[in-house]
Amino acid sequence: MTLLRVLSVTSEIYPLIKTGGLADVAGALPAALADCGIAVKTLVPGYPDIIKAMPAADTLLDHPSFFGGPARLLGVTYQGLELLVLDAPHLFARPGNPYLGPDGKDWPDNAVRFAALSRMAADIGLGAIAPLVPDIVHAHDWQAALAPVFLHYHWGPRPGTVMTVHNLAYQGLFPYETLGAVGLPQDAFNVHGLEYYGQVGYLKGGLQFADRITTVSPTYAAEIKTDEGGMGLGGLLRERSAVLSGILNGIDISVWNPATDPDIAARYSAGELSQRPANKVALQQRFGLDPKPDAPLLGVISRLSPQKGLDLLLANVDTILSEGMQLALLGSGDRDLQDGFAAAGKAHPGRIGVVIGYDEALAHLIQAGSDALIVPSRFEPCGLTQLCALRYGTVPIVARVGGLEDTVLDATEAGASATGFKFAPVTAEALSSALRRASVSFHDKPAWQRLQGNGMTTDVSWRNRAGRYAELYHDILATRRIATHQERAL
Ligand code: ADP
Ligand code: GLC
Image (cartoon, rainbow, N blue to C red):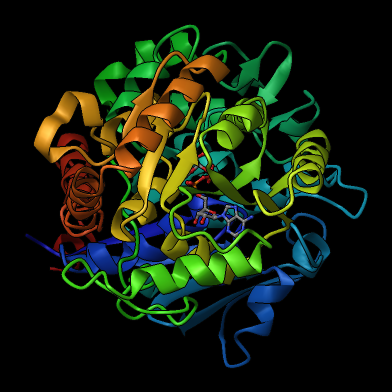
C-alpha cells in the first residue's frame, strides 16, 4: 500500500490531556496506524499542560491575528506522537478541564475556541504548511467537527475527510450568530447544513459533510441510526448510512499491561496469576475495605454522568451487601451521584469504598485488584474500561449496549468462551440479577478462572483494528479520485 498522510484533529490526547476515552484513542491509534503505512500527525489545542510539556517546539506558522488574538502553530514529537499544537493563548491558556471554566460551566467562547482548532485543521489540509499536506483530515467529535465543514465550503481540491463520533450526546450546539462569527457562510444555516432546531450544530455539520462517518463500535453504529439512539441526528445518520461504519476501539496494551504496570502492587500475566491477589489486598487497604480474600470485589472507574448508569448500581447497594460483595468506586462528575456514593461509603464502611476524583494510577490498581468491573451504561459508544478489565483478568459485568455488547461474551450464552456478564434491559433489577449470577460464578473457582483466562487472552489491542481505518482512508481517496501526496509529487 502507498504511504498516506493523515491529520488527526482532537481536543484531547493521552498522556497530555484527558477527560475520557477520546484521549486514549487519539493517543494510541497513531502508532497502530504507522504499522499500516499511515503517517499520522495530530493537531491539538495548546492547553497549558501541552505547552508545558514541549519546550523545544518548532514554530511552523505565525498568525498575528487568528480568531481574535495572536496564534502560532508549533510542531513537536512527544513520546512518539507527531503533534501540531495550536498555541493561541487567548483561546487555550486556561488550566484545568479543557471545556469548563472555574464555575463548572462551559467556557462562553467554546464555539470560537473549537472553530479555531477546526479552521487550523482545514488550513493545514489545504496546504498551509507545504511539506505537511495531508491526504486525509480525520476529525474526532464535535470539537473538531467544523474541519470537514470548512473543507466542504472551500472551492477547489481538498483532502478526504472522516468524522468519527465518540459520543453523540455531545454535539456542540451554539446560537445562530456563531455561524458568521466563525466565518461560515449564511447558506450553511439550513436543515441540510448545520441548522439544528434554530441553533448551529457543529457535530451535525461534520456528519453532514464528511466523506465518511465512523463511530467506535458496530452496535453503536446501528443504534445511532434509530430515533431513540440518534439523539436528534438519527434521520441524518440513516440518510448517510452508506458512508457510516463502526470500527471497534482497542487499547494501548503497553500502557495497560499487568506484567509491567508500575502502578499496581504486584505484576502478573495470563500464564502466571499467583501474584494477582496481592493487588486485591492493596486495593482493599486503599479503599478501607475489610481484608477478605473471599468477598467478590467489584470495581468501578467512571465519569459519573447519566450515560454511565451508575445510579442503577447505587440502587443495588442491598444486593452488594446481601451477596457478601465489596465495592471500590473511583469517579467524578454529577454532584448527586458523588454525594450518593459518598453516603453509601459512609453508611457501609469496610464494604463500600469510594474515591471521588480522577486518578490515573488508582484506575490501574482497581483493574488489577478487583474481581469484576461494573459498567451499567445506558448507552456506550465503545467503552474502554471493560477492555482494560479483560486484559487484567477482571471479569466485566456490563449493560448490553453499544461497544459493551460487542466486546464482552456473556457467561450463559457463550459457554466455554465466555468472558463476562451482560444484562438487559438497563434497569436496577436486571443489574441485580447479573450481580447475583456473577456471585454464583465467583464462588465456583474453575468457572471464574475460565472467565478470567478467556478475558486475558482476548485481543483488545489496536493491532487488528487500526487496519480498518487504513482501508477507509484508501477507499475515500479511491472513490473521490484524490491523488495522494506521493502521486502529486511524481
Ligand atoms: P468515556 O470516554 O465515556 O468516559 P471510556 O470507557 O471510553 O469512557 O474511557 C474512559 C477512560 O477514562 C478510561 O481510560 C478510564 O480508565 C478513564 N477514567 C474514567 N474515569 C476515571 C477516573 N475517575 N480516574 C481515572 N481514570 C478514569
Ligand atoms: C466516548 C465514549 C466511549 C468511547 C470513547 C472513545 O467518550 O463515551 O464509549 O469508548 O469515547 O471512543
